[in-house]
Length: 127
Image 1 (tube, rainbow, N blue to C red):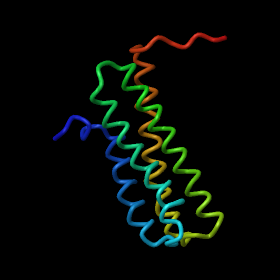
Image 2 (spheres, rainbow, N blue to C red; image 1 turned 180 degrees about the horizontal axis):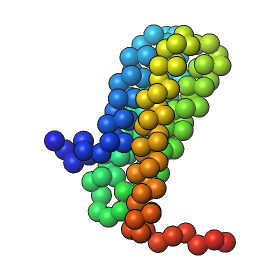
Image 3 (cartoon, rainbow, N blue to C red; image 1 turned 180 degrees about the vertical axis):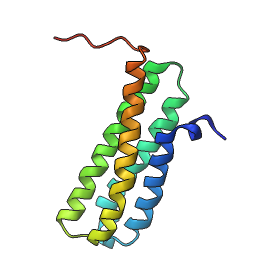
């Protein structure tokens, strides 16, 4: 087992990626290089940044990659909203992605936040 495979946030991001790939196979073909590609890239980046960050030396580097992962999950959330608002996929199928997306987001954010709370990084100074 690779070290990143022990990270629960990565596991949830991976589950989300697999569910998203299955779902996007049924989205409109004209979106293959548009919203489908955008959603897949964002979902892949969420997990991939956890993998890459876990291989870095020190918590500061890891937290930076987790920051990007959280951003990718937010990007995916917006992409799914656009798909929903444009009625490009069945609502039940999009709703099926909400659980994995929320789980991945919560666990990734908790991991990001826990690094700071454990005192592994200096606190940001108020301006």
